[in-house]
Length: 348
Image (tube, rainbow, N blue to C red; front, side, top):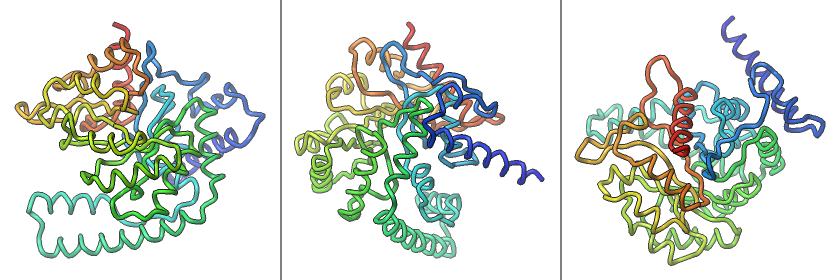
């Protein structure tokens, strides 16, 4: 009975949002009318000139990962602009289902990194990786024939609800081993979704950033390189010299955890190349590098937001929820707290 009820709610939500996306007769106020959405006006997370957004990866712990449910999470947080992980849009467009248990995969990878994986577990991991590679090939074939109108419909659904897509980060698209067709697809789809840039982990390889920069120029869209603890003030310099379409997706929390001092200085020195910046509160190496509830770590989040406001930097600050969700809470409630933190910091 519980599953039937959950399925019914999901179907109702999906149908409601699909109608809103496809009909020119639906007004914004009518779109918000169903009680399940709880919205009677469009969201606004631009505070004193600073656009605060969220990466949809932040909602990864929520049970329903559909396009419609993800939109509801965003609206429940009052957020008006996002960095979109590829999954909600691609599944909306009919991507083949991935039947692999990602939780098992991540658990085995964690054991491998720690050196505690057994022989049987190592064999299981190798089998999962082979299955994942086969699935990636299947997705690559699907991408060659998928109708771009589905991504247009996705964009309309989000835009009409008051949510803009400023960045797109599809999985397994912009890596060293990806084909030209993969890269073309990712950038073409980003433009259809209305994004100004795509994001990808910095490859640490000059040949790859040169290649991606050339593709970005071809498509007229920026590629912003994300960094973890390999971030230094000079990490992006070669890529920036290679192409004006190479840019930064700075992660301020990881930058602090990497042991870099004066984190606000990289914002000042690279601001013209930053297309978006991830926000999280991490500790310095001396304090353990923890990923903490905002306001309890060492990352100068308030100072960064106020710098963006005072200097009128145009790039958005992207909430990325990575600290452990407290018992009794969920990702939506925690992102709401992060939004409130940003609004308070920007009102001072």
